[in-house]
Image (cartoon, rainbow over all chains, first blue to last red; front, side, top):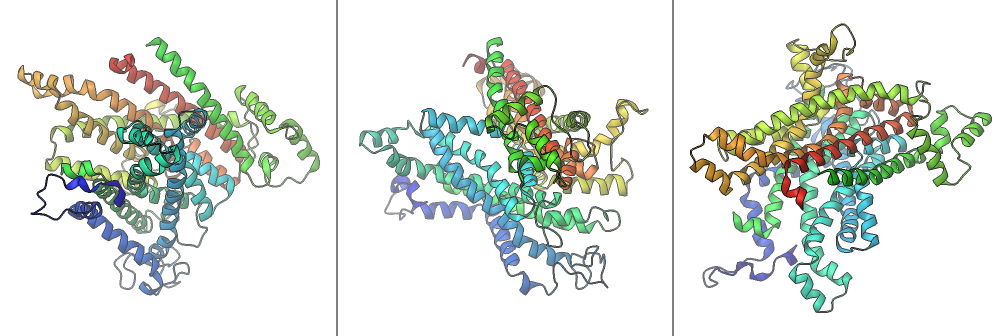
Amino acid sequence: MTTMLPAVATEGMRSEERIPLSAFQQGRAAFLADRMAVAGLAILVLAVLASIFAPWLTSYDPNIGDTDAYLVPPFSPGHIFGTDNQGRDILARILYGGQLVFPEAVIPVVVASILGMALGLIGGFFRGVFGEIVMRTLDVLFAIPMVLLAIAIAATLGSGPPTVIVSMAVVITPYVARVVATTTAQLRNAPFVDAARCAGFSRWKILRREILPHVIPAVVVYGTTNMGAMIVFAAGFGFLGLGAQPPTADWGAMIAGGMKSLASAPWISTVPGIVIVIVAVAFNYVGDGLRVALDPRLRTRR
Amino acid sequence: MISYTLKRIAMAVPTLVGVSLVTFLLLRLVPGGPVQAVLGVASTNPAAVAAVTKEMGLDRPLYEQYFIWLGKALSGDFGMSTQFRVPVAALILPKLQNTLILTTGSLVYAVVLGILIGVVTAIYHRSLLDRALMLVTLVGASAPVFWVGLLLIYLFAIKLNWLPAMGMSSIAGNSGPFGVLRYLILPAFANSIIAMAVIARIVRSSMLEVLTQPYVLAARARGLSRYRQVVVHAFRNVLPDAINITGLQVGFLFGGALFVEVVFAWPGVGYLMYSTIQSRDYVTLQAAILLVSAVFVLVNLIADVARMALDPREARA
């Protein structure tokens, strides 16, 4: 990330008063100044750590219920979030469920970011037939409602977390590619790119040295901001029964599992939903913070 | 204007061809191949396999298979549902109508409330109301639709007993088209929230920008009321942005409808798709995706033309 801001960014400050900060330090300062982003990051770090260390944080088995403790309401001793209709501790299922939901949301975004970046760079930079083919193919994928396409792919491939990851990656890729293609198309005739051309850089070198450093922050921000939606998306697969199969804990499947006892035990569906909302909102704030931190123009406006 | 409309229609054709290709290939993803997909799970009968192979042209090259399938689809033949043993077209069309009722309802909520929130937050920019409404829309947009649906059912159907929790009355039934509205209120609202939040955000930022323009300042200088400045003068130039984002949201409304239909047992295409997941009725799934996408392409076409009609600057460009 340090390559995106030249050292002259601190120009205008009198150097005898302040030591110029590096781009990374400036970005970090901007991020830390955004209280909501810091709070969001703290929540996410806690949530991920809690999922990883679930076995140490709870003594309950997430998949095997206690036959003496069906439908225990929340805030009961021993079961802070209550138990479900099989006597399973909901907190334990949330913690273990995170081990599934976080990778299900993060891996597709990472895969789609890489694929989308490659396609978007080609589509945005090369004006020839090849770029045109890439862009028109993306247009077609936009014409199919994203969620429906993902679910259709998952339904044909058969359920399970790998399927969820593959189908999500496929449908997110065009969106990343569009962001990259737009950024690239705006930059391809920028003065510094023309300068690089005049200097005799090859097209590949221009892409790598001049364009890519501008595209990466855009992709990082786009991915982080949408990660909340991806958590919801991954939960949606679980809700439809396309994710991990029972009895494995999965946030979306937990919501579906509580549907039948909604009137008598509303917490079974409610609690996982609240967790999803908190995590999704946290991702949104972190994304917003990163957007400001990674964009020198937004940063100086503050 | 007319030439733009024609050009835009011409652009929709290759998109539709692409969509049909993707949905065609979808059936090829099925483990066991299209024969299994078309015959259903229990198909070891060699005569049946041979018949399907011949009918779908599976012994011919892939592109010929595509044209055979496309030709049938264009004449309204989407094959037989393996789950219900009826022609898919007869099965889907009534469901598609119900889904369109649901998404239209959601669209009304999303547009009306989204624009209202966007305009109000722009006028009271940086006030407590602005911050509160933006937070509410962010939380609403971050919540899974199926979860919001369940909360609405719990509150309004189970606790307050105001509205029905499930199903839908027939439009032709004795309660008439207005009877459907009672069933529509909750699911349409649940499905609208994300689109509403997105529209509110776009309208807000567009309005903030328009409000600083000289002509709005001139309207204020002429002593026009705040209402006239905002609603008559500024809003007109927010509309193209609002229409643009609304058109894009329709796709997400179709996606959300799937979950909402499952939660509220709404007899639409989404609920049908959900049942095809369990029964592995791939033929129906394929037709559902194709038809919904075609509707989506059409909606975007209309949105683009409407935006053009409202914004002469773009029409000239």
